Amino acid sequence: MDNYFDRFPDSYVESSRRMIQTPGAFARSAFFYVQETGYLKLKESHVARRKNLKSFLIVLVLSGSGVLMYDQKLYELKKGSCFFIDCMTPYYHQSSSTDPWELVWVHFDGCTSEAYYRYFSANSLPAFSPAAFPELREKFSSLLDVNTASDFQAEIASSRLIVDILSILLQEITGSGEEKSPGHQKMAEVRKFLDEHYTEKFSLDELSDRFFISKYHLSREFHQYYHVTLNQYVISRRLTRAKKLLRFSGGTLEEIARSCGFYDASYMNKQFKKAEGVSASEFRRRWIN
Image 1 (cartoon, rainbow, N blue to C red):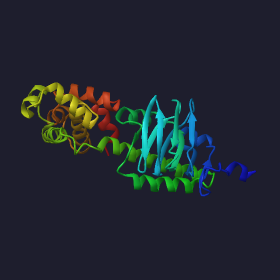
Image 2: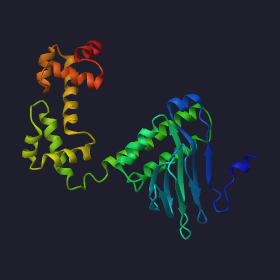
Image 3: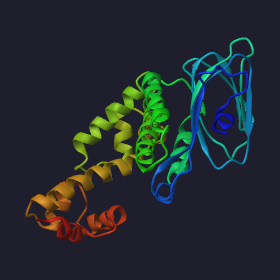
Image 4: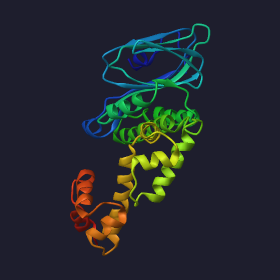
């Protein structure tokens, strides 16, 4: 019976492997978990077509070529390509008949999978060619090896590896192309200025004048590169400094607020409650030694 379930169609090379898992209750509630992971190499064209599947799918193309049809758009895939999709959306992927592909894949889910995917899809097309492909390949190889077992240790290791894979993908889409972009150097200069002057008072208009860029373009570009607004970035830097002073200095709330660039202790408290859920004085009380 095992041979029946493990057997691949004749179009697959014999070294192809597939591991199907059923996660335990704790893994479902707390981990990323594998539904299926595998490796295949084809002798001829093959198509996989699904929809309304509660699963997320990441595929690496190790060799050969093919296409992905996803969300009514066609993507060409080749050696070094990767795609990440939500399988609730109808899709199919098909290998070339003249250049059959070799793939590794993982179908997975987990309590924060959808949030990861939403962030990815907001910043990237589903298919691209990651610079970190060799590192991803290594993680997939480890994932396949780990899932030769079906136990809690395999679930722990699988979750860690899926986090690694997702982290690599997000680093790729948020970092790739930044250095090459014409606007990157300008935004890097803006961020450097903010890092050096965040405790000072300045307006968006003043920043715009300093860097010879319209305030609307400045706001849009900064958010595009750093995924946070200018104001949020400055507030975050001020809060981080305030946390250090609250924990490791004897300054009053007013003194700390002014030294961090907040208008006064009341405004600092407002920002603390928004970010931390507690006032600055309560933060100090909880963290003080």
